Length: 243
Image (cartoon, rainbow, N blue to C red; front, side):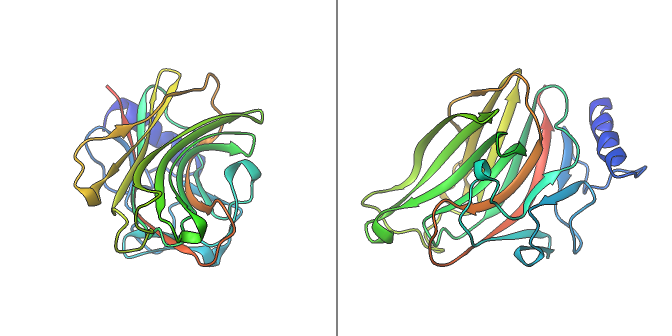
């Protein structure tokens, strides 16, 4: 383990009063890798707006059920699962790998640096269906930042279209990787659709944050009130150092 990785591990351990790192397998260049082993979240995590019936750790996965309308900017999202420690110093990339049926057309699985509703930065591969799902759907890579309640955002279509097929469990390009790369003062969201055999990362616009607040967080919400729910199964969460 490098000195930088050890320092970050010590910060995480210190935040929960442990002398050893509480996360999973150590890998080269990784500052943190949580593969969600066991039957509960590790002590490095806290759960905001907790609903114990809405998430579980089992079979090496973190399963979160998105079943209610909300948004990070309205503080109405249940089970925002957030690291207790602040992000590591220097440049880094945080990534999650997940599988999810886009079955309501309003899912928004996210990776974020979250302090509160007025101070956060987030990336999501969110869905938007048309006319109740009768005329196709799209998946977007969306990103936004809020600083003291002021927001800037972007979005681009990454799969589907207005005339395309409605999202279903069979047609969504799972599994999906979502990441945020921090370099200097910029943060760049990117995605990879492994279900479409994409080998490279597809990035979008950079977001600049001079004084970031909060810690890395993961979860899911529905952007509109719809019928049904969506299970998001997360394989792993990883933070790597940029050289």
